Amino acid sequence: MSRSKTRDRLARLTALVEGQAGVGRWLVLTHDNPDPDSIASAALLAHLLRERFRRRVTVGYGGIVGRAENREMVRVLGIRMSHRRNLVWRNYKHFALVDTQPKTGNNSLPDEIRPDLVIDHHPERAATRRARFADIRTEYGATATIVGEYCEACDLELHRRDATALAYAIRSETQDFRREYCPRDRDLYDRMLPRADNRALGKIQSPPLPIDYFRTLHRALDRLQSVATLVVSHLGTVEQPDIVPEIADLLLRLEGRTWSLATGRFDGRLYLSIRTTNPRADAGTLMRRLIGRRGKGGGHGMTAGGWIDPGRGGEMGPLEDQMAEKLASLLKKDPQKLAPVQLD
Ligand SMILES: [Mn+2]
Image (cartoon, rainbow, N blue to C red):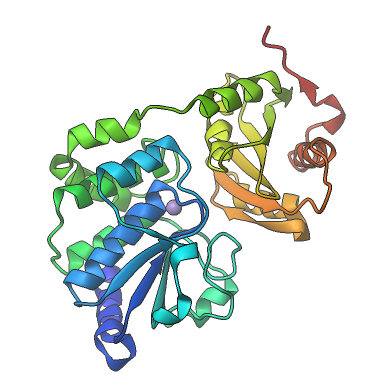
């Protein structure tokens, strides 16, 4: 079903990009603080627009490529991306969003710009309907799988580094298929892995880690809290926001726990990440209820992220505690019983 879906949509995409409406420079944007899924999706869509449609394309991002693995991915695979501070919006005629949607608060596309193309696997947002072309497939584990299928559907030649980027994106986004995915993700991964550069994959998966990583990890373990099956840690000010979901993933591996929450402060915002081992959960909706109108958030069933603007002079502590207690309540656990976990 999905393959014919891709072909139908490819016909519409082709009409848009090849038609008069598609002439002029394209900007393909990842979400802010891009992860491997977003980076691979953008790199492959840019490759498709260049090779198949002969368009001039720039890949842009906001925030920081923070995680050591993601920095290594960009470096080893030679992926070229421009930071938003170096982008002049009016130089572009067309805008594409991958692994994110308009007005979600996690990408740098100005609200007044209507995107031409949106490809994503997060639940559809109202603003996405204004895009000229949108392909939202929530059943997919990775947006990179959707973009990869487009590349295959138009017989685009995929180089070793493209196959490597796709394989790594699917593997990391699904945590080696321990998180939500569909057979399409597995199939594309199986087609890409034999063509991928194994040495590059190895380097990307175990890069050198800066001392700040260990400092933050130390703090995370020092400030561990728990109630029933929920484990929580507040990292305070962090060097880069990607460490927050990374710690949430790690905490979830604590035996006997099925939910984790990590928070961290960066650049005036409090970032939050929720993880669960329950495949029937809806972490994205839970995150949006947790944040309410104080910020932006969303996600999938088993993973979610968001941020809150704590306002001026917001002290580290009370807001974090309030969020942890609210999450405990939403999960029907007694917030009063949230207590430190002593490790020494
Ligand atoms: Mn994704």
